[in-house]
Length: 283
Image (tube, rainbow, N blue to C red):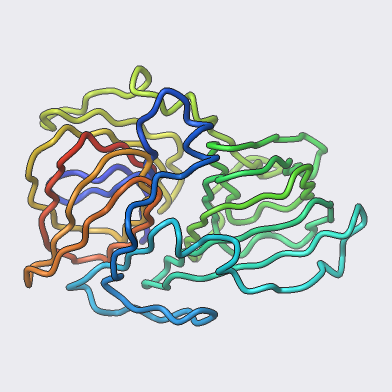
């Protein structure tokens, strides 16, 4: 099974995180991205590698997903509003989990086919709306987290060009029981530290679960500086909202991670998490 949830020091997960500033909008306008670091897994543009090595993780800086690095896909053939066209860049596929980035120009189109996977995405920039089959709209903008469960169908409308990072969980069954299946939006402000709870047994850690259905769990985690051994029982993907830390494989190879980075950690990974500046992430 695949889990997107807060990372703990003994197996859990990690959430998506952002850069600590007075205004998160300024971060979205001017992402704080340090000098590009080499990825633990080299990923050619346009190629989705199958990453089966559980001894190392996959990493991408914000620059890896910059719009000029995405591969154009062309116009959307089923568009009925405007002339939307999109572009994408994958990062990796690890078991049931895939991650990458997507950009789309303004426009709208129906999405009548039932989703075959659950998608979770974090909005870098732009504004849009996903509408359920019963015409219930769900608006999203910069900093929001959107979940489209397996079995969802409806409509997409992009009011302002959207750029996002996404994680997809390819699980076997439709787990949602509502009719129709609904999109879920978590606004950025709902992941503020004041909304996070301190879990049992986790010193200096605040976390919150915003979605937990079947094998998919999405949450936010905030952790203070320190060193924490990590072993994963689930495939983990997370986007760093704020902070600086090193993630070290069992063989000693390490990656410096900062706000704007994306990480995918395979099931069975063992390593070390050394936090230099308080970290908040969504996963």
